[in-house]
Image (cartoon, rainbow, N blue to C red; front, side, top):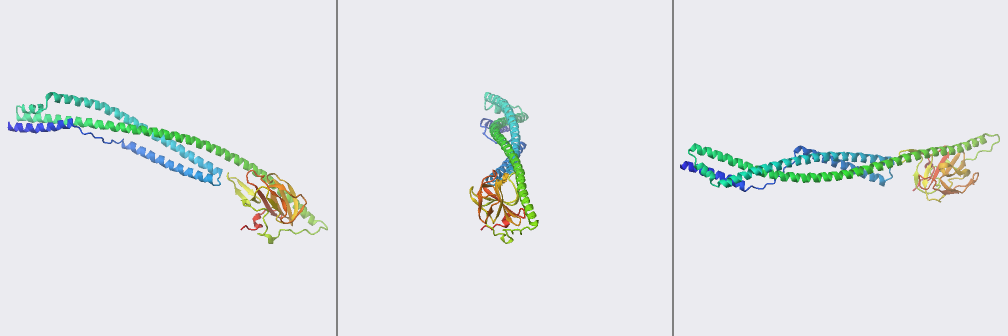
Amino acid sequence: MRVWFGAARVGACLLVGAWTAMVLPTARLAAQQPPQSAEQRLRQQQDELDKLRRERSDLEARMNELQRSARSLTDEVNNLEAQRLTTRRLVVALDQQLETINEEVVKAGSGLVRAEGELVNKRGALQRRMVEIYKRGSLYDVEAMLSAQSFAGLVARYKYLHELALNDRKLVQRVEGLRDQIITQRMLLVRLQDEVSRNRQEKDREARRLAELESRRQRNLTAVQLSAQRTRERMQQLARDESRISNAIATLETARRRAELAPNARPAAASTIRTSDLGKLDWPVDGAILYRFGRVVNPNNTTTRWNGIGIGAAVGTVVKSISAGEVVLADNVGTYGPTVIVQHGGGDYSVYGSLQRIDVRRGQQVSKAQVIGTVGDTDPELPPHLHFEIRPKGRAIDPLEYLRAKR
């Protein structure tokens, strides 16, 4: 009997410990993470979004640099196209991220519903167990063990009560776990809903940015096309006008040579521009060089060939002859505008175009540094300037070879 009573005391202590665990549950808020695979997908998508944002930021910085400098319209269009493609990829990435987040919202919502349903069932079972325990009293288990008829019966009852206590403890732990899971799922749902809201707002912003970029790209593309068309037309007109100047000089050269070969012809006058004048002649007007002799690439990637140089100067600035000679043309020549050609003898000519006013007439003799006109603003593509050429023997060369070097 003393053995039975000692075993009963041990069983009672175990049961009291089980009931204490049931009555005084410890509140735990274990942060339950979303499935690892979903987290990895979201992390990868976020890394991709960050990469695209950095790429677009670099493109925007490049665009600002282009706009601050003398930019090429074609470069600007290409930059806008790159920005547009990057922004489109960003919108697609945001769509993918939104889809992933929505999947997680559905899974979290389903898990929350299941957890809440199970919690209701477990709480009901726990409540029924607590009612049964209360009705039977705190000494019921001790009495059940002491009423055993044999030691084997005592052990069997002890094992049964022990299993019952373990089951009740698991029930309590499951209720606590479900409660923590529900709290975590609700927090996750709130976070995911915030992510969905931010994602949609960012997607709306990116969609508006994409529409703006496409509009700007189309406007700039149209501007490039118009600029290219205007440049082609201007180049064609310039080629016709250059041909007119060249033909006029060629005609003069033919007449000069024919006169030199005529019987009893007087000796031809030597050119007032000599080889010794290379790098020493005074400038027809002071100013900065806007374009140089030869081929020049325009901002829209078209190419213009200049037979002279453009010297920038204020409208009305006087233009002087670089050497003595005879005015063989004083007229308006298309894209050249009001133009003066001076023959210096020996087949050498100087050309002064884009004038505002002509102060000499055809057939007039001019001296070195004599005013022949003023700078004009006849070219809509360029600021006010003088177009200046030197043509020894009628062939255009770089005028800078003859002009005095600037200090």
